[in-house]
Image (cartoon, rainbow, N blue to C red; front, side, top):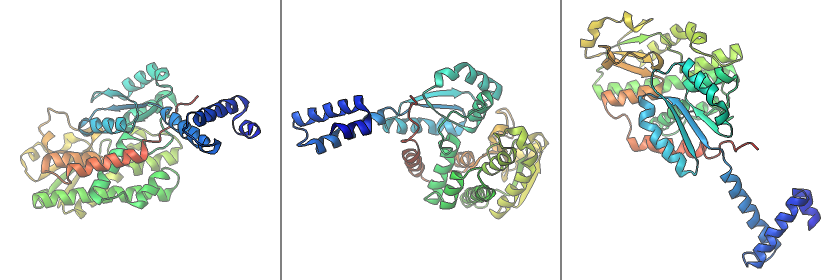
Length: 341
């Protein structure tokens, strides 16, 4: 018996394991060494569970996160995870987040870093390496995007799931991301049109930073450059993405679609037009004092969904979205990286 223990565990470990098994038998918890071994292995599994790294959620605040991060944190805690938060106020610059990361990098050792696109990009720039989970799916923006997809379609499309797992690996998988982006975008606008009786007739698309949160363009450019990308790398693709959005809007029944480089080019009088709206990426959104602020809809799709519900009413039941968030967290966050020893 001792030889087999030594083979599996090493001599010291074998002695500890044998001692634990004897204790189980003497305490009447097991009738023989076979049963005792199973009990000891189960306890080891529980101990390993306890070694899961704390989750460090770091992100720049926005309306979407303000609404849903509390339930994300509560769900993670219910899964037995320790959660710590670093919330950067809206408007915090990439340079400020890079500085924070460099000053606090040592304190983050032994934790799984879960971020949004914004802080994740700052962490990569500051360190040259993304320290978070190896699973690219464990990401706040992608979590919310997938939760909205499940809430609307009832499930995450199989093709999109595959494309996410192959992210940046092949041109074919990247193209699937654009197809899914189109599905979501058009469906959200079709639901808005149903809610408003085709009330949206005119939309201005603002080019500035438009591709900042596009899985398709981020994947495409990263594949070409073989590194992480930023807004500057993506700038020349903004017009191409705007053309896609224009076509998708027309597919959803929006009659007039205009593309401008900056919000300052939009006629001020559209603030008086009930059927006119503006699409911006959330990194280029209008300032709060803007007269056009009430007309703004942000992308990516999860933010678009949130904006649409605020302006036009519920697109899906809130419990369906909460259920989707919970299911994804159970699938994705319960098995994050363990503390490296």
